[in-house]
Image (cartoon, rainbow, N blue to C red; front, side):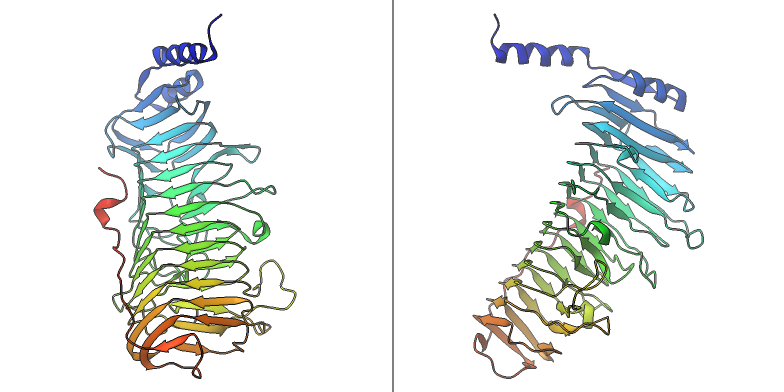
Amino acid sequence: MRSPIALFLATFLSFTAQARDVSIANAAALTAAISAAQPGDNLILRKGEWRDAEILFTGKGTKDAPITLKAAVPGKTVITGKSSLRIGGEHLVVEGLLFKDPDTSESDLILFREDSKNLAQHCRMTHCAVISALPPAGAQDCRWLGLYGVGHRVDHCSFQGKTGKGTTFAVWLDLEGDGHHQIDHNYFGPREKLGKNGGETIRVGDSKTSMLKAGCLVEHNLFEKCNGEAECISNKSCGNIYRENTFSEVSGTITLRHGNGCTVEKNVFIGNEMNGTGGIRLIGEDHLVRGNYLENLTGDETRSGICFMLGIPNSPANGYFQVKRALVENNTFVNCAHTLFIGFSEDKKGSLPPVETVISGNHISAPNHTLIQAKCALDGITWKGNIFSGKALGISSTPGIESSVPKITALKPIKRSEVGAAW
C-alpha cells in the first residue's frame, strides 16, 4: 500500500499532467472552455477588444492547481462596453485583463459571485486594471468590484478614473460575516469629488453587517488623489487591518465608520498642503491606531489628522457609536493644520465623548498651528509620554503631554512603480 504522501504526489502529478493551456478567440469558445476546465488549466483570452462580453467564470480549482483566466498578453486583452465578469467557484484566478471604459450604466462590473446563492471562495484577481475616461451616466450607482464569499485576494491591480456615484471597491458580508480577504499592492488612482455620499474608494461591509467580523487585510496599497468623498476607506465591519498603505494628496480619510476592533497601523498620509487632505477618523470600540505618519494635511473637522467623533446614546446601526477603549500610540504628525480633533459631531444627538481611551507616545510638530481641538470632556482620555510642539496646545496643560522638540521619523511612502498592474 502506498503512503499518504505518495498518494498525494501521484494525484498532484496527475492533475499537473492533465493541465492545459487553452487559447480562446471568442465568447462561444470561452463558454465551452470554462465548462470543460479542470484544476490547473489556463484559459487564455486572445489579445484585442472584447466588447459587451458577459463573462461567467465558474469552476472548482484547488489551492495548488487553480483554474486561471488570463490575457494572452497582459494588458492587451481589453474588456469594454457593456461587459461584466462574474466569478463563481473555488480557487479561480483572473490575471492580466484590462477593463477599459466600462459602461457607466452598469451597476456592477466585476463580482466575486455567480448569483446571490453561489458565492466565490478563495479566488484571486491579480495584475488586472480598470481604467476609465467616461463621464457618469446620470445618478445610478456604478461599482467596479464587489467581493462576496470568503478568502479572496486582489493584488497588483490598478483602478483609475472612476466617476459618478458608487463605491470603487466594495466588500460585502453575509449574515455570518465571512470575508477574510486580502487587498494588497494595488494602485487606486485619481477620483474626482462626488459632492455627496457614495464616492468611497474602498468600503468593507455596510451598516447592516457592521457588527460582524470581516477580518480583512488591506495593506501596501497606494491611494492617489482619491477625492470622491470624506471616506476614502469606509470601514463598516469588525476586525479589519489597514496597514502600510500610502495616501497621497487624498481629500478624505480612513474612516472607522461602523464596527469594532480594527487596526490602522504604519500608514503614510502625505497631504502636500492640498485642500481637504485628511488622516484617520474614529468611531466605535477597541480600535488601535499605531505608528502612522501624517504630514502637511490641511483638512479640518472630520478630515483632521485624527478625529474622534461623539457617540449617540443608544445609537442605531447606521448612527455613531461612542469611542471606547481606543489606543492611539506612537504616531507622528508634521505640519498638519488640524492634528487632533476630539469631540466632533455630524449628528445633533452626538453627545458621548471618548472613554477608556489612551493617547500615548505620539510626536507632533506644527509650529504654525494649534495642536488639539476639544469639543467635549477629556476625562475619559489618558495621556502618556506625548511630545508636542506647536503654536498652541489648544487645551490646558495636561500630564502626559510634554512641550518639547519631538523626534520625527518619517515612514517611506509607496512609489507608483511598486504597485498596480506591472504592464
